[in-house]
Length: 478
Image (cartoon, rainbow, N blue to C red; front, side, top):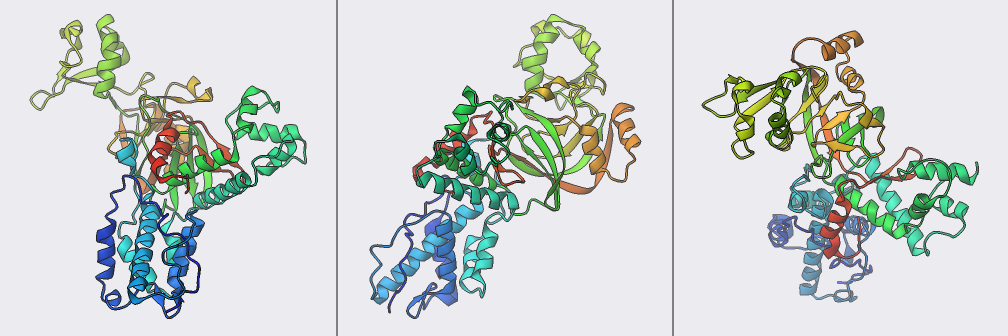
């Protein structure tokens, strides 16, 4: 049998880090299928099957390139054919697992990171590919199908190409044009747009901060993009026809409907020591005028010192005190408690704040359940929305235009009814007409509508943490 095609290097397809890939058992399961017990799965006649070529092309597009030195002979003995077929299977399974799950298992790197991908049965998927008339269609289903992912992957290839050509050209106009900025209206206008997409002060002047961003090499930008492609793979393969996405690195909430952003608002996200997690969930209700059940960590670390200094604080803030044990959940009189004698370890109370101007949840809270007990909500603290870096909360997402968001999620409600529900009355639960997916993400690179790449802040220093987790795999590839 003759193998007439030069091969890509399958040994260079990296095994996902921390993803618990049981490669040997997956290979064994694949070959246990009756169709593969007596004949190779990927070699037919004098060459590779079309299905194998489709998978090899996908691996090449992902950046894993090289050659099969040991098995590149023109004439292969039967045992060498099976060895090559097994090597192909191992590489295809490794690629499939990486494309479906990512190169790292998020929670094993950081407890605030989760994955919601649904491509668990890679063996079944590969079996389908090996028998498919249109293998390319199945291969394309494995990676995220969202336009944002495809645009970012194309941008990664573009920055890689610029880096391999020697980096940015020297003249400023050519440097900006190489990255895709339109300089026909003048360099200052392009600099202004560059500054806007890099979170800088927009004045059109190349000052120290702008010069520092311009000096970042295309290779470094490609690596930053690759980190965000990895985070994309942690998301469900379908984000939904209608969904909310909060990019904590951008401090922004978007409502996306049929692929288009129909509503955006500035957001305040978690502090670096209390970050907003990476997680996907489904929102089912809006609570108008929500009670705030103070988390114990906030109660003991932030409110208890105030209560010790000012015994009247709880009454003035509209905070009620309840027992926090299975035996005692009755409301207690805070004046009968010696708060100076209470410590963090002996704090056995649940603090609940009534709706009102001091309630940090404001007039509404969007309810979606996650292991992190974070929500999207209104806030009475308005000045923080004018800050360029808005990482001030305890993990929840505060939105600037919460009333507008509520009105869009309850389209049958008149605007004045939403307004009244947020400002008067007691707590009120309202079920959404349809559940809506909520994705809390952390993208420090994304592609704008005009095809330019924006590079945001990294308030949690999570880029470096993810890069370190990916480092054993060598060159940063998506």
